[in-house]
Length: 475
Image (cartoon, rainbow, N blue to C red):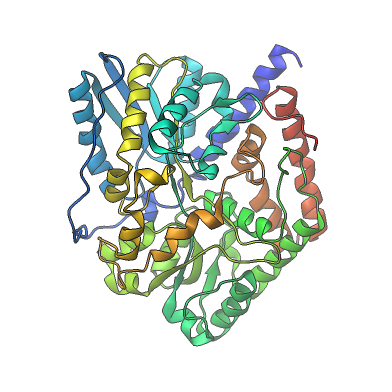
């Protein structure tokens, strides 16, 4: 492949991620819409954990700039900015923080990379393997963090490490589970007071709720992040996937066709056409308004309801990943991927801050109201205690206890392989929700929808494989 063609392919993918974001595709799972609303913040029932500080291995100086998303739980940002600036004062670094809507973050990152100047440290909330040629390898940060705190969770490691190049294109110290969120008052009359536990339960109960109570399910099939996650969870539950562990395309399988057939029936029996045009806030808003009986999402919409409508909050409960014929598995809702661009003016400070951030993950989790989970469980032994007795006023207090086992049913984008550049492009171009939607609308048969998805996916993998950024495959 010529260098000109390689640069064109790189631009094409960066443009795809940027345009998708600008279209609102990755507003998702919270933030502007998911957590919008007024109300007084809930006061915790116990004091915040104490932080910790470790002297940097070498003197630091100068300035460091951070670009990050506006957190889906706004209380996090109120705490984070002065906290990181206090660290900067202590180590002799002038720190500035810029927050932008996540929908704008991929395009902003692309612009800085192409200009070869910008922020020293950038936080994304999904895997960003496409930036590997333009960022520092953070193996040294991962190695030091692991020496201090134990083994990183596999789902975080696979979301930030390229096994082909042996580089960490990002550092992923935290993640967010993606449980099912349901309104108990709607599910109790159909005999499922604890919500559905299988995809078949979801279909049976969801159809009965729609027929008897006029409330639909909220599983999207549109070009936004929650639809991307839901589609993958359904595929995995049937034993299907986009790639195998050797990074070979395996999307066109009997199991994938069965998953698409199931989604088509789920749509016909439990949903309405709105799911094809949702943005990432739609399912949260519908759940809170009582217009949806079940969604796949984080806890952020419920946290907002605690402040804006406590009666609604008391009716929202959570389920682990739904079981299918082969598995019960969900994608992480958010995966924190910190990157240090090659143009960073102060990479030493950026790396030291990442180690400081990791050591203080209890504070991160606390100020996100338990939205953020650690990639290094040993650094936060109190997490289960908080989940079993929510310090932010859950009713009942153990409403979040099931999330203590979320790592057992959560995985990375790209499972059973890594979050490689090809999986990143498939994710950014919404091939999976489009596949489900075309069959559900009756435009093509499930078999044809899967074949068409394969025809789009194979060239993407071929392109990135030719560039040496994903594995050659084989057993």
